[in-house]
Length: 213
Ligand code: SAM
Image (cartoon, rainbow, N blue to C red; front, side):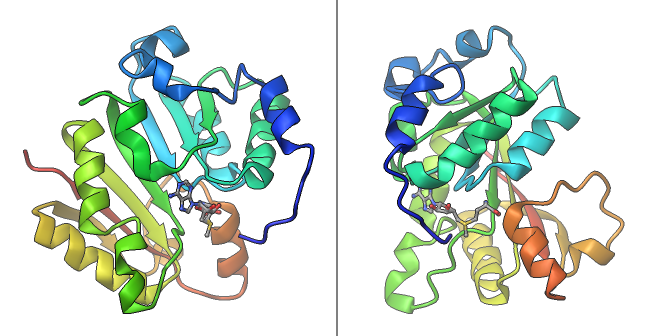
């Protein structure tokens, strides 16, 4: 993600507290109250500029979506999409996803999306990959029993690594696609990165991984 310094980002986020939730630790165990319904809650870790979740929110009004993004200069674009489209089922958290259990209770989340996560190709950085076992354990701690991770990437190395990581953790793999855009998968909502890479002719890999507990 190319970062441009946006000195106004903090103020923008504070002004849009109906979409960008500040102090999310206060809502641990209370996210259904935040949305005002009992609909399932799906999160995207590393949501970037929010194109995927904005599209999913429009496509699935009976699902609540929460985007988690580390950088304030990036998340402002996602907030702007929620504001422009007046999406009542879309919230954003400007936090580090490594602390997910501070924000969500056990079983509060129904699905985790990981889209075009940073690959961290060096072996010594493997622990930073969002599909490393410590992250899989953290997702398990906030997901419902039998919850799922849906993962897309253009990066073959990260995809191969993640299939092994999911499998070693005991997740059941479903719908593995080695070329999503040429597959029969329906209803795909493209992320910003997905658009960029597929325009360059790169293949998109996708898998669904289900916790078996
Ligand atoms: N998902 C978007 C897409 O497909 O267009 C963005 C992909 S971008 C390569 C990865 C994003 O994940 C970046 O915006 C980065 O800031 C965010 N990210 C990486 N690690 C994160 C973390 N620990 N917590 C929150 N966001 C994170």
